[in-house]
Image (cartoon, one colour):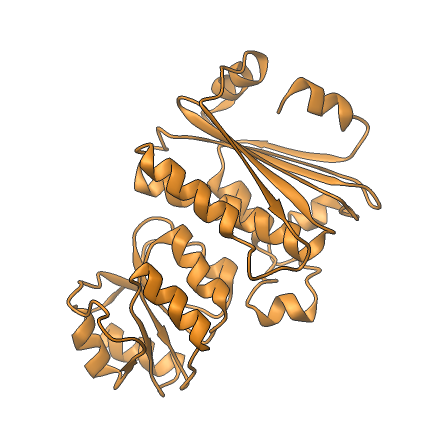
Length: 115
Length: 178
């Protein structure tokens, strides 16, 4: 799935201009616990989460996230958005819940990342 | 896993782990450590979640430039990051030492206490003593130490209640055949 298709499907808002929306999203993972997210060491993955603090961007340094979708209408503060932009990491916010996002993406063929 | 460090921490409770198939390599490293290629050092201030993780991030970038495989890189970064967060979240601050060798990395964390009351309990997945601030940030799942073990080829945790904690791990660049 291409990231721009995902944004459309989730009725998302891209949080900084010039984000690379043409990138391929091969798989996804969803959690609000950082240690859970850190299980994703096998391949770069999309992350769906309700966490919006700077450590979510920091952990993308460790496990190579393709993009982050903030669910339930959450939007990080500007300094966190700036951190993502510095890394060229697309970040998106959607009003949909974590469950609904996961269901929509799974039905559209996006597989779960290997852990 | 230096002899001097073992002497210093003798008499303290410890947890040791060596992944299957790495026993000989780890023994050889402990007995005859080769010359280090690169050494790094990062301070980890207490409860500073703005800088926590920077050391692990920089360590990963360094190893990436040295050409380490991306899956192995992620394992190193996750183990290191979990340990760095532990020091920031649970101790009065500490230091992270990364030592890069030809075929592996040795990362060591030493903090200023207050130590771990029960190491066996701390190693149990799901057990956590994280406070509300730490939990609000998304930590405190009780998976930090188990995640470090899972990603390491060898790990040692030495601590005593009221004293300092030392955690170290080895990860070989050749990776595992899974």
